[in-house]
Image (tube, rainbow, N blue to C red; front, side):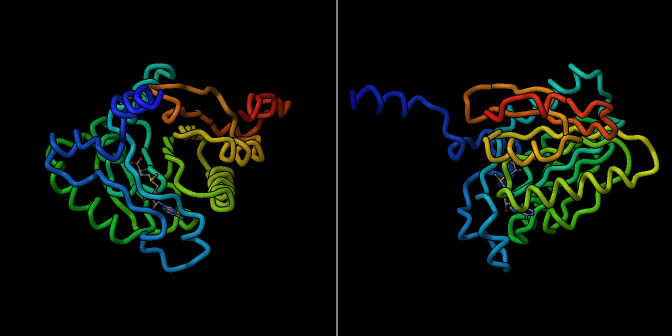
Length: 238
Ligand SMILES: C[S@@+](CC[C@H](N)C(=O)[O-])C[C@H]1O[C@@H](n2cnc3c(N)ncnc32)[C@H](O)[C@@H]1O
C-alpha cells in the first residue's frame, strides 16, 4: 500500500517543480514563498495572505481560451487583471493574448520587483501592454471597460470580501456599461461562501482541469438581476 502511494506521489503533478515556463523564457516565475516569508508589513494583512505559488501556464491559457471561446470574447475589448500576481507568470501568460492591458497587482515589493524583471525578459513576445502594481488588492482602482479579473486563491475571506465589495462599488459607479468576468482558481468552499454573499457576482460555471487542485469557478458581474435568483443563489457551495 505504501509503495502504491509513493508511486502515485512520484507521478503526480507538483506545481513547485514546474519550471517549464521559465525554461522556455529565461524568467524566474517559479518556486514557493510561504506566507510567513512574504514582505507584508501589516500583521493582519499578512495573516490573511495566501502563500506565493504560481499557477501553471497551461492552466492560465486553458482558462483564458475557454472563456474567449465560450463567450465569443475578443481580448482586445478586455483588460486582464491578476489579483495577487506574485512573480507575474499568469499576467505574462495573459499578455500572450491581445488584451487591452495585462495588469498584475501584488502586495509584496520583492515579488513585484521579480515580476517586473520577468516582464522585461518577455516583452518582445507580449501581445498586450504589461504593468505590475505593488499594492494591496483592496486599494486597487479598476481600469475602465470590460474586465477579466483573475484570482488564484490569493487571500483569506476578510480581504476577499473587501476586494469584492470594492469591485462591486466601482462597477456600480462606472458610467459606461461593462462586463466583468472573474475566474477564481482553486475554488475552495471559503471563497464560494464569500462570493455567495454578493448576488451580483453570478456563478456561471465550475470547471475542472488536470486535477481537482485546479478547479476554477467563473463568476460574472450581473448588475441588475431582476429576480435575484442567479446561479450564485441557487447553487450549492461545494
Ligand atoms: C497563490 S499566489 C498567486 C500567484 C499568481 N496569481 C499566479 O496565478 O501565478 C497568491 C499571491 O497573492 C499575493 N497577495 C496576498 N495578499 C494580497 C493582498 N492583500 N494584495 C495583493 N496581493 C496579495 C501573495 O503575496 C501571493 O503572491
